[in-house]
Structures are given as C-alpha cells and as structure tokens.
Image 1 (cartoon, one colour):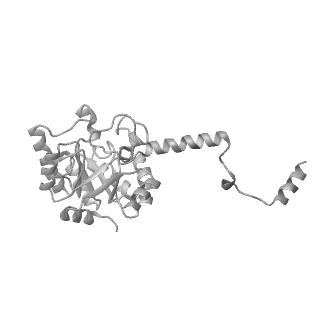
Image 2: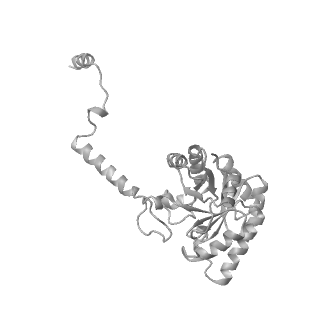
Image 3: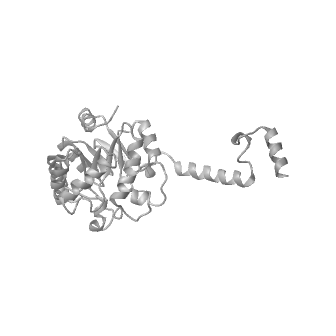
Length: 279
C-alpha cells in the first residue's frame, strides 16, 4: 500500500508505529521498499555516510536532488522525504519554496524536511501553501552543530524543554505534516508526542514517539568508529561484505574464479578454425 501523509497520520491515531530508514540510492531504496518500510528519508546525512564529509554542512542542493531521484525510482510505496540542505531555506522564504519545489519536481520526493522551530515557521507555511508536504525537525538538528558545539542532547534544562514544546506546537500550526525529534530525553519526546496531532518520528528520543528513524549504515553495521547510544545494530552487514570481498580477492588470485560455471562456451569447431587462421 502506498504510504502518504494521510496513512502516516492514521498510523499515529491507531497506535501503529511508523518505520523510517535513510536511503541514498536506487538499490537500497528498492530493498527497503520491498521490506515494507513506511518511509524513506534521503537525509543530508549522505554528506557523512556517502561523501565522507565531517558533517552535513557541505551538502548541496545538487547532491540532494541527485540522490533523491535515485531513491524515488526505487521506492514504489514508501513515503519519500528529502532533506533540505544547509542554506537552502534559511536565506529567504522565496528560496525555500523554490528549493523545496526542486526536490519534488526534479528529485521525485513526496515531502521535504527542514530543521528548526519557530524561526522557520514562515518557510514551512509558504512551502505547504505551495502544495508540498513538510516534515519538521527539532532537537539535535545536525545543521546547527557549530551552534551546539557538537552533537549534544538537547532539551535537558527546563527552559530548553519548554522551548522545544513551544516550537513543536508552532511548526504544527504552520502546517508541518510530521516532525522528527532527535537527541532529546525520552520523557520530553513523550510529552511532545501526546501534545501534537501530527506524527513524531524519533531518533535518540525514546520509544514514546509515533515512529522511529535510523541511518541504515548504522543499523546494519556498515559504519566504523563511534556508534551513538541510540543506535541498535540489527545486522552486521559490514562483516558480511568484508568476507565476500576477501573471498573474491582470494579466488581471483588463486584461479578458482571464474570457474566453468561462470564462463560462456562456443563450438569447438569455430575455435579450431580461429586457431588455424591465427597460426
């Protein structure tokens, strides 16, 4: 069944948890879609996990359109959300609407996602007025990493917790169809989830949200180094890939690959004639 704004809202209302994973290419998106994931996020996290940047700030609109288009071609039923990269919506409302439109028109996304609360409500309202669904993003917003001084849990003080609740209400009033809550205390996420009529998607925000999202490289064990506390590794695909690559290298070098079953044949009479002509 095709996942839409309406079906995601119905999931919240019925208590059916929403599933979301990141994807950045056709093949991965097709696999996730076949598995039945409700939504695929083409995150600007691609800057880190696909392009090797230190953070998400260097990601461009062209990067996002390129990867979103690939994902959209592979996702038949999933609700495809494309991140609006850093400085694609902050400068002006007009630029925000134009860039959101590009992600829909050129990238084939179903919705766009942007970071921030009250300060981006004008952009959210204008994008929604242009008939483009908007997913908001509150809490640990990666594009604000320099302001936060790193990837730190947000909303731990009374004032900051109240600000997040207030921001959540305002982005809903501006027309957001859902909100990602990242890196905030679980109890605070529960309060926000109960207060809002729109779905909340958590990442490092506990199980009280209406759904969850993870970066697929994290949850499949493809990343190395530090793993955030909120990540559960559901498979060790990295080890499987390393094993497969090592086997390929070994068999190629020792001559066992390709074997006869992996090669094409031709009539020996033709080979004999060719050999005669060569001689």
